[in-house]
Length: 504
Image (tube, rainbow, N blue to C red; front, side, top):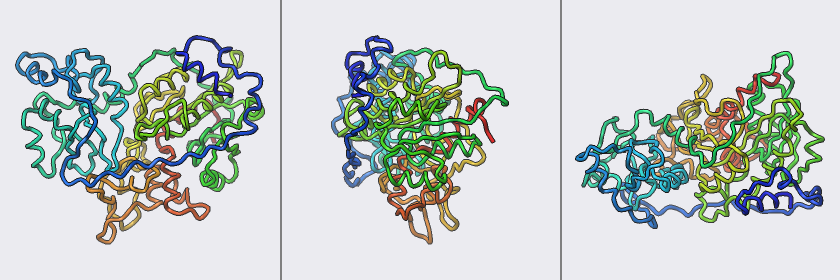
C-alpha cells in the first residue's frame, strides 16, 4: 500500500504530479505492522550442455540485418568512415560509438549492448558476441584470462570472408581484444577502449536530469560523526568501509533479513549495528526517531531484475518491487528545504538488467548511474550500476597499494593461481570454475583446487575469516560473499565523504 502511488505514477507514464502525487495515504502509516512473508527462491539457470568444440551455438537470435555485409566494401573501397555505420547491424542511423571497436551503434543495438554486454554463461564466457551482442555461433577466446567471444558472422563480415574458418583451426585462438592493436579487415580495437567503455555506460542518458546538489566541504572543526541507514545491508560492507576509512559512526541502522548476514555483522562489529530486519516494516516515524541520517545506502535484490534470469518479473513485481522501499525511505530521510546539512545516498544493482528497468530506476532517483567494475581494484570481475550523489562518483577507479589485484596475491601459502583474474563470483558454487574447460583456478600439490573461503574474502577485499562465524560451511559463506559489495569499490565511493564527517 505504501508503494502503490509510486507504481501508479510509473504505469501512468511518469506524469508530473509534484510531491503531493507520491505522498502515502493516511491509512498507510501503519501498513508495515503485518508484513507479508515472501519466500524468494534462488534462481539456478539450467546447466550448459557439454561443448565439444572451440565454439558454441546461440539459438533464437534475430536474423542479421541486411546491409551489414556492405560495411567492408564501403570502408575499404569507397573510403567511408566506419564510425558512420552500426557495427552490429550495418545501419547508418548511428546514435553512439561502439565502446570497444572503431565504429558506431544504432539506437536499437545500443540498448541490446547495454543489456547483454555483461551477461555471462555458466562457463564464464560472455553470453553473446563482443561486437554485436548477438551471434548464432560464437568462438571463445583461448587466452586463459579473457572471457570474450566473437560470432562467426562478425568475423567473416568485418575481418574478411573465411576468417572464422581460419580461427577455428587455431588452438588456442586469441580474440581481437587480446591480439596486438592493429586492423583486422575493418575491425580495429579502440586505443582508449577502457575509457570509452566507461563513457559508453555513463553517457546512456535516456533522460537528462539536473546535476545533484553540491555540498561545500565542512571545516574540520565542524565535522560530526556520521549517521547511516543501510537497506538490504548484507554483511555490513558499508560499516566495514566507513570504519576502515576512519569515520566516526554515531549510528548505523541496517535492514537485513538473512540471519547469517546478521550474525556476521553482529560478531565482526561487536554489536554496534542496529538491525531492523524487514525493510517493509520501517516507517516514517522510525526514520524520525533514529535520524536525521547523513547517508542512505542499499542495493535491492537483483533476482527479478537480472536478465540472466529468464523467469525474472522485472521492476514492478516480485523482489524487483523492493526498489520502491529504498525509494520510499530515501524520500523520508532527505533533509527538508530549510535544513542546511550535507546528505548523501547510494543505490546499487546489476548491470545486466533490462534497459527499461534501468531507465525507470533512473527516473525515480532522478539521476543516471555510473558503471563500475571491480576488476580494476581486485582480482575478480564485478560490474555494477551505482546511482547516487556522492562526490566524484565519475572519477577514475584507481587501485591502492593495499588492493590485491592478482589472484596469486589472494591465495594461501603453497597454492598457485592458474589465472591472474577470475570471473564474477556469485552465490553459485560453479561460478568458481574458469574458462571453456571449466577448470578450478588454483593448483595445490599438483592438482586443481577450488578457492578457499579465506581466499574468496581477500578477492572481495574483506579481512580474512570475516565470514567465519556461527559454524557456517563453505557454501553458506560463498553465498554471503556472492551477494556482497566489493570492498575496494565502496572505499573508492565513500572516500570523498571524509571532507564532510568526523574521522579518527
